[in-house]
Amino acid sequence: MQEQPIHVQTKDDVSIAVWKSNPKQSNGKVVFLTHGAFSNRQIFNGIVGALTQNGFTCWSMEWRNHGESEHSPSKFNLETVAEFDLSATLNFLVNKQGLKSFDCITHSGGGLVLTMFLIKNPSYRASIKSISMFGVQAFGAGSKLKNRMKIFAGKYVSAMLGKVPSKPAGSIENSESYHTLKQWFDWNLKKNFVGEDGFDYREKMKSIQIPILSICAKGDHFIAPKEGCQQYLEAFENPQNKLIYFALENGNLEDYSHSRIILSRNSEKEIYPVVLKWIHESASSKSKA
Image (cartoon, rainbow, N blue to C red; front, top):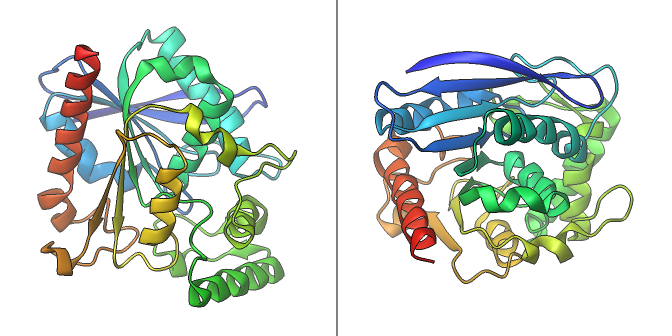
């Protein structure tokens, strides 16, 4: 696997790192990946390796303030990443690299920013054959009272500190600012998915009819529990969508955590093949349609 970074400039003048991973022998297919909070492209090292071994070319975008992307001079939130970082990257891939057909893989907040972007930029939907979401939810983590109390406490402590510490999130990047993740706390406490200007993303999610595979795990108690992932997936109202729950009780290798579900030896053994199959099946069904 060969990697090379390319930097694209956003409309608010921030340089975003986009990494291209080339296979030794290409099958002509492309996958776009974007990570979530407390993370960078390294969270995809395992699955990018599996994809390139199977002939896929991969493009991985790093959010501003993450990995090799430039640090923003001003505060930003999840909508900022969707509106500027993702917009600049997909414009580069589709309109300058000429990618007219590709699949997407997201982890955590990466799925939220992709959802928000596609809602407000419908012209890009036709280019995407499928989406695989690892641990993605926005408004259902507080379904159980115990979790709701944790979210409320997490918001309060983070507001006091001005940041959300990275270690409790089990991550590989530095702490996130409270401003960046305030929306996530509020969405889960209020059980909505509303932008700063009052725009209702949850109401518009059904406009995205791209086949979506949602992967969740028993060990992901706080960030993306099964109930939250299921509610998020159901909001798209697409019968083609599929949720898979990984747990020891279902015969899987472990009760994966929020990070191990995407990057671990066990996920490489039993989850990556599921994603590859989903990509293949989505391509087949789309060609028949």
